[in-house]
Length: 352
Image 1 (tube, rainbow, N blue to C red):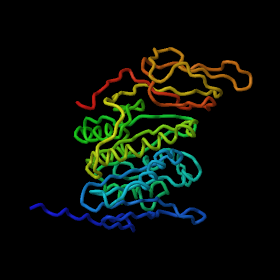
Image 2: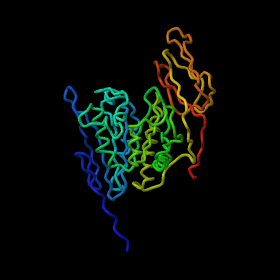
Image 3: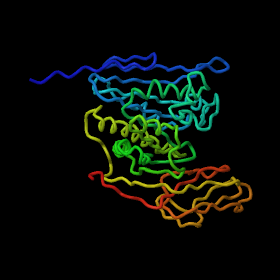
Image 4: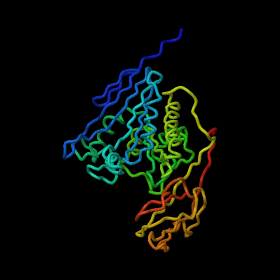
């Protein structure tokens, strides 16, 4: 005789409470600004009718990176909590002050590393009595993360840049968590997965570091952007929402088959990065994505915006393939990130 399915549990996050089958929206408030405006984090809870794992999805940790916010909105319109086994926690704008002013960092304290940088090894920088960024980090650590069985931290480019890959960095000290994270990265659906970044080893104190130590799989998709969003933005939002659903299916939260338009992924080790120097102006790229650049070759030229003269050349610091990342708008400032390179690309079948 089959047993009846277990009913889901009530999900409590701060002052927010969702019963099985409910969709709840509210704010987790931290501090107040000088004008006594609330600094808060918007949270949606979709509590499944039956028990199951919990997926936490964040977007706009860097306030101007909103493709993930749009993708979460699509999820909220399309997903019925009554059809879930488990819980979906959605934070469409983690950095509301950055979002409000269309900037990367929190406008109320302007910490360069933002909320993730305030996590700090478990976490001396995160504090319920600190700056707004520190208080938001404290909320993440103490209210959101303890509920999560996996985390998707969605980033994107802005109007001038187009990064399109998933970061799932290898950590030999947390091999088992990395392997589970890699499976979620494959399911999310972007064809390029970075298992290392050109910025060196994972700095202690960020989201991924804390998730590793707590045994929670973590992936960071970079969901495009760029100045052509009017024409290709719907596609990016659809891919983002589909990626979230794919991870939900992989975890058993949502029924159905994982939807992918490819049968392999490229695992890359991003080894070098290229940026503009002290000369700003008009950018002219010399290589396309996927092309191989040799050390010393000119990747980009910078022209004077008024006279048209060549004022700088950006040369590759090493051999490598141009990855799906970087600046796409021709007007660039000083010390702007242009692209990353990988010395090898390993294509892995999803059937392996």
